[in-house]
Image (cartoon, rainbow, N blue to C red; front, side):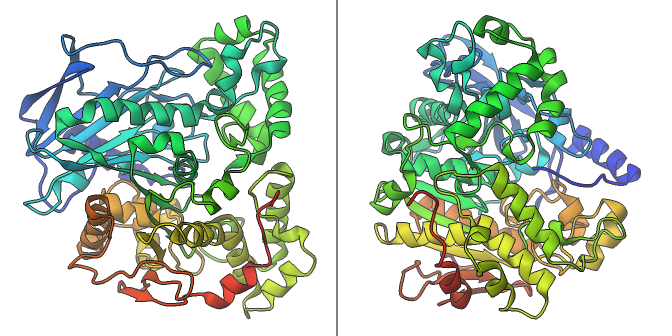
Length: 561
């Protein structure tokens, strides 16, 4: 989860204390120090975790054997091996960033680790949730306190439990490179172009083989992803070979339409990466140490810009070259879906950063230029939407609102987030009635967030819900992202509880409706039902929500179709 501003030094100090003594985050119920070890015997090991005041947590479990730039192999340990599982495994190597938590923790090429939380390992047939983090396919990792599954599990109703899992996977150049231009290349390295997806699939395979030992039901597995992780979920849905491992999916503000590059772009990017790394052969590349790669990651990311490595590629083998058509034709018909996003996704693009941290710019063409840069960098990519290529589309969209800057930002949010999200719901609803759409519009009071964080605050200039806002409430880790959610003490317990039960109910039954939020009607292509989490904190299932905007956006079709 990429932050864009630093906490004030005093808050950083307080957070450090919190990390050391309270497990890094607040909860509805008081946390206590870890009291005793808890042991689980599974096919791949006897894992020793810790019981944390009623929640059994197992961290840093290896789900695949690592080999540089090759697919992960199955782990070789057995139930006879005693394995400590009390510390997070290493995150993937990524550019160090003062405000990206995961980048500050130990990172490595070998990052194939997952974490498991459940209340009672002895309780059987529990729903399983596997979460795939976001971070633009460059940043992120499970050590980020926002993703701590303890708080979700701990605060389920007294008679409810689940198995909650978070995973690390390979990012950036470690997750996607075309190595065919290097000396010594063989087909053994052909999968390097989409290793991130293979890692995610390997994690699912490990879960399928082992999670019953934690009481998980292998017939009731939900995969969940936010932002780039949401795009990953979409690609797993489009791949029928992975469906033996899961039957439900949750996508928060993520679409492969956004997180994609063409094969040609990946190839040209890879050549640039090899020059920066100073390698000409497979032997030289695979001999690079973690430090040698880490030292170059910022340069690689900066030089490649919006076309950075890590974005998934429809290579025709690991990811279908026709994944949009595959979904339209019912490839994911057996997968229940909960999908949505926020109304202010990337509103930070509209902030006048030279003069303010919360006031909007004055020229809407600044947003247009941002879109042009993204589209140029990710040109000619299957499944993407290129709104500016269609004559009159930009001007027509701006004419639909009085505030032209806000309207331009809405177009940005719709093209890269909300319209693809709607289309996935539309396509899926044709094949599976358990398809649910939401629009998250609730955000804590902007002035309160500014007062609490000062210059570290991250807000929309219109007080809307930014990218990640929904996820913060679903996980309920109140101190995970205070720059956006504000004072943890002021974060609404009611909305946290509602969002948690939404996710849990869906994972358990395939329907997010529950007593805290009321009836949630499935999406259909006539009424377009969507649950709107309103700015005044109401849950309102509406028909034909934003229909005029969606109808206008229908002028766009995915590239290559």
